Amino acid sequence: MNQKYNVYLVSDSTGETLDRIFLSLKSQFSNFEYEKKEFAFVRTGQQIDKIIKECVEQENSLILYTIVETKLAKYIANQAEKNNVPCFGILGNLILSFSKLLNQKAIHKPSAQHVLDDDYYKRIEAIQFTMSHDDGKKVDDVNDADVILLGVSRTSKTPTSIYLANRGYKTINIPLVLDQRIPPNLTSETKACVIGLVADPERLADIRRNRVAIMKENQIKDYTNLDFIRKEVNDSKNLFKKNNWPIIDVTRRSVEETAASILKIIEIKKHT
Image 1 (spheres, rainbow, N blue to C red):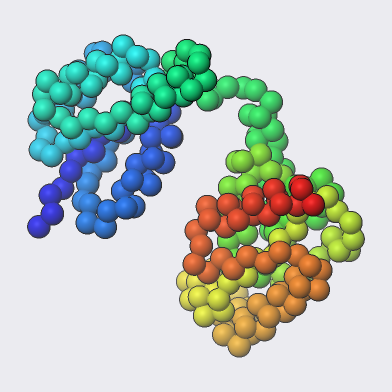
Image 2 (cartoon, rainbow, N blue to C red):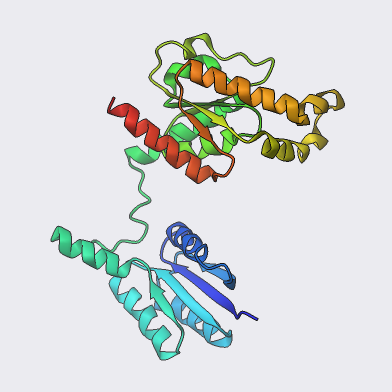
């Protein structure tokens, strides 16, 4: 039987960066059993002492940390070593290497990435825009969007839109259903990057069957019918090809992977 680890994620900020790094790390090990505990805004030795004490009391404890203040980072490393607790600093060596490369001293300021600058307000504006234009709402605003996503039901349009909004892109998503027409000006010149999302019909049928409980009975038959879904997907593909819109198959992609492909398309469009 594999050992179960107690993983302590210790950050001097929100912990978002560390959590994402740990997510990537653990995905590389299929038999990694763990219990995760997160500690955000750790900025004193006293807080660290409590964490170390808890680690010592638990079996198979390990610490991953992102602490940019040099003295505090050394303190957690030294205390962990004294108590035989495996401890790994995520940013320390990277900051040091960058400091040498750039020939300048790092500021070692916690939460330095969370500043109320122009990029921050751009993201907030993009999120507000995207939420108010979800699922085919306010389609007359297509010329104000950075990205427009089209696709049949359950092709991850909304979560992908929200992810892009968090990256600062105003996104409109439009469902391709029988009574939903695409805006006429979408097929003419528009600065927005228009992208079609498709998925495997059988996969869509499975996803839709899990949703039918909240739908009216007369809608269910076509909504989950495999032949009907195949026609929907084929019609959407034909529409995308007719207008020369890039197509992304989301069947085996996470939202993050789909968004990464969209960002690449946006970058290519900028240079054409």
